[in-house]
Length: 336
Image (cartoon, rainbow, N blue to C red; front, side):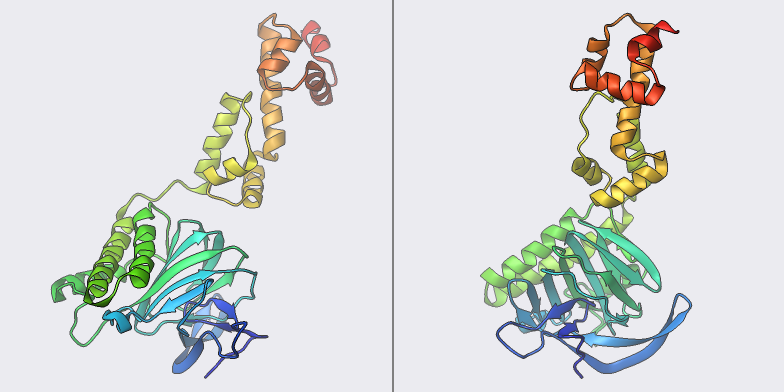
């Protein structure tokens, strides 16, 4: 059964796409072979299983690896969002784990009613029974992902032994929905899968891609064992400390936001929540605090203090100082 949404459709990973410019064939279809309901927050919502439409375009690539001899990976996908698109309903992937990597941009995943903000480099992971959906699809977001079967008749996963497969499945079921430790190896494996798919042939392609899939799964499990990265608050705390220690330096918002693993707008909001001031105003306050200390404890000229603290001119420094204290720097020094 096809699901339509104002000319948009949704695939098995909850990602909406527009129809092809050159065809009326939808890019994916949803299937009724699983249906149910789940509590999302305080709301009971219907859950459906989705079946991805396989296609290969510059912005959407989805392949069934069974066709190249890897039946345990029914979908390998790459998505580039060229426009912001609407939120879709909750769904799950019956019989499959979903491993996804946010390569560029940011997304918000809702998994079992809990929202997770994914930044570039973060991994999202959905178990077969997890109702989930992406709540935001910003323009420019790029995703890699795959569905991997949770079980098969032989009991083996890829080319792991039966005992190894059992252990891996047990560990996969224990993974959280959001992983943000060092994910470089998983990123490398996704890139290598698409390279091998497009450049290799025959049994050698099957061999190389199977090995890479096995490495990706074990890399994912290793990522989950790593120490979690510092929280956004911890990273911003380090930036605040650096500003207080070296206020004379120039601090670029985009660079600071990258250090905090946040978008510039989110970084400014979080910074203001922690300090009560936007970054620029906080830096100015730090400079003025150091200026007061130097006016009080040294005989350095006002021009030198202004220059050392990163003000473009002494007049610029004096203007901000008077606005903050009601006095010029010289008057403030004399009244001590």
